[in-house]
Length: 205
Image (cartoon, rainbow, N blue to C red; front, side, top):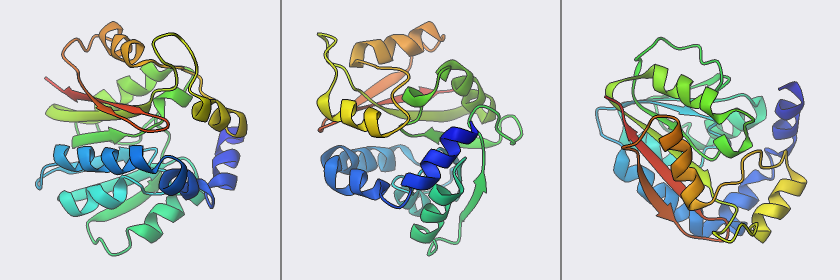
């Protein structure tokens, strides 16, 4: 964990090049789709907020946002981008062990992180725990393989310079991941781009 934290601290200052230049088409649509899923009355938790790509569009749409990351440098970037929003707070947090009460949030967002985790089900359990019954869990994730099991070339490069994709999802295998975890009724939104994305949306019962 400490090694990963140090890595993300180091790349925080250049990460927006990936967001705003290399994979800009994906991220523009992703932000629009996320906006449509947020309600004005929502108290939102965002895990793995990175440099604030999603926090920046979630904050003006919701009642309250708690933006979290385990990288101090990433969180500082988010805070700088979102400083104009008075409804947003920032805290260091580990997605595998969230320090929040059960059922605390209307909506829980964890963007582009589960493919980096050795045990994404553990994270899913935590996201589910802190979401209230009737709330929403939103998990966008990069898709780095096509249906012929060929790895996306941009994802391959990203993996080489980063901590690597621990889970290499196709669109189909990403949906199967949620079915196997017991979320048969999860819905999915496809976002195209150089490194495409699938947004899983779970309405917690």
